[in-house]
Image (cartoon, rainbow, N blue to C red):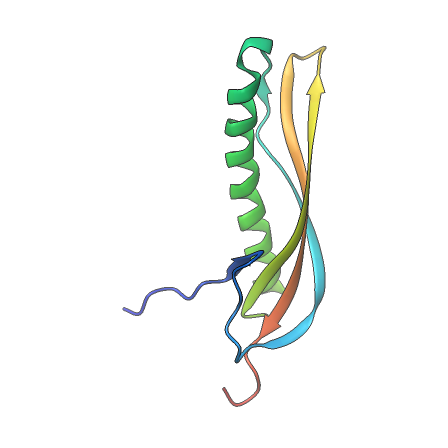
Length: 107
């Protein structure tokens, strides 16, 4: 069985030169919510960031497939932290902009 082709290329990673540019798109993603603690705030960012990036990869892959593309090149991301003091929760949200590519006709 052939290895699965890479679908997402992040920032400095470049998609294959054979791919054809289709357009710019963006998706949003949100991390899991975790219990907030001032003493653990650095660890919270790491846990939430891992969750956010996993969801972003999932969302970008879904969009590439939905739009009939072959891969995406993520060119920009904006991550924002959120805190709900009433619930004692912390989470991250992000907006990920990417360029969609397609295999050229006849390739």
